[in-house]
Each structure stands twice: as structure tokens, then as C-alpha cells.
Amino acid sequence: IFNQYAWAAIAMFILLAVAVVYRADSLKRIFVSSLGRGSGTAVYAGRPVNEFRAVPEEVKLFTEDQLTELQKRLNDWAHSIQGNPDLLDPWLQVGLVKKVIGDFEGARDAWEYASIIRPKNIASFKNLGELYWHYLPDFPRAETNLRQAIENDPTYIDSFITLSDIYRYSYQGKSDSA
Image 1 (cartoon, one colour):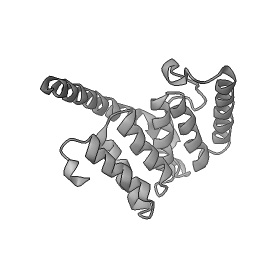
Image 2 (image 1 turned 90 degrees about the vertical axis):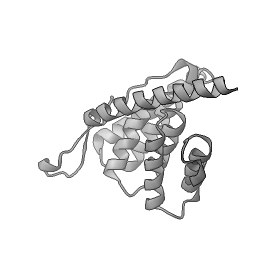
Image 3 (image 1 turned 120 degrees about the horizontal axis):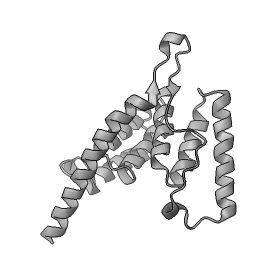
Image 4 (image 1 turned 30 degrees about the vertical axis):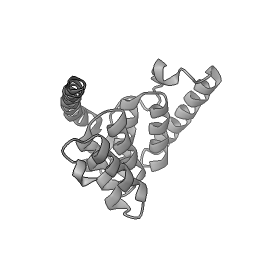
């Protein structure tokens, strides 16, 4: 039993180390401030918004018609963003479609950008908390995003529950915070 836990801990440590290194580099690449240009809106420089990068393991239960519909929706949201990149809802929807098809980095890019253009929303921060917990393991980032969601709307109980679950089941060293 000890060996199983030891290997799991080592694997988790390696994943977290890789995620931290990758994350620091990707944040520099994804968002460039355009405050000097007068718009006050960040410029998105992440992966293409309309890119449909489906992961076979994640979409194996979808029919071709369902995948085509998801691609259509992604293109519709991308078109909305092209018209006005300062709208929150299209960015949230792009992130949802990308998460459903297994493009977790694409979902992250969309929700990180949504968090920049609307820093007082809860949806993007809550979604990032879940994403960093389950799909792109980075518990400190999951915690940070969930804490921001809680700060933005302390009446939304689900953010508290998710943060407690992370502490209880995944974030070693913080289990007594649950």
C-alpha cells in the first residue's frame, strides 16, 4: 500500500512541477496588455479561438453529428468574439466547448482571458478552479481561482464546496482547511 501512495505522490509532484513551469511560460505568451492603445482591453494571443482540437479519448462517445454541432457552436462563438472580444459570454462558451472535446489548454486560455476582461465574474474563476483541479493538475492555481470566485460572490456556495473538496481529497498539506 505504501508503494502505491509513494508512486502516486511522486507522479503528482512531477505533474505539478511541469504544470508550474509550463504555466509561467504560457501566461507570458497568452495575454498582452493593450492599455497603451486606449482600449483598456487585453489582447488575446492564445491558441486560435475557433480551433477544434478534439481529443479522441474525450469525444469517443459523441456521434459525428454531435461533433459537427460542437464545431459549429465553436465557430459561432469565435465569430461573436471577432466582432467584440470584450464580451464575457462567448469566452465562457468557447471554454466550455473546448473542455468538452478535451482541449483543456484551449479552455484554460479562453477562461483566463475571460477572467482578465471581467475580473469580477465568478464563472470563469470557478471553471478554472475545476479545470486546474481535475484536468490540468495545479492545486495552487485551482485554489487561487476558487478563492477569487468566492471573493467575487460569497453567496455562491458551490465555490466553497469545490474548494473544500480540493483540500479534502487532493491538496496534501491543506486537508485540515476543508
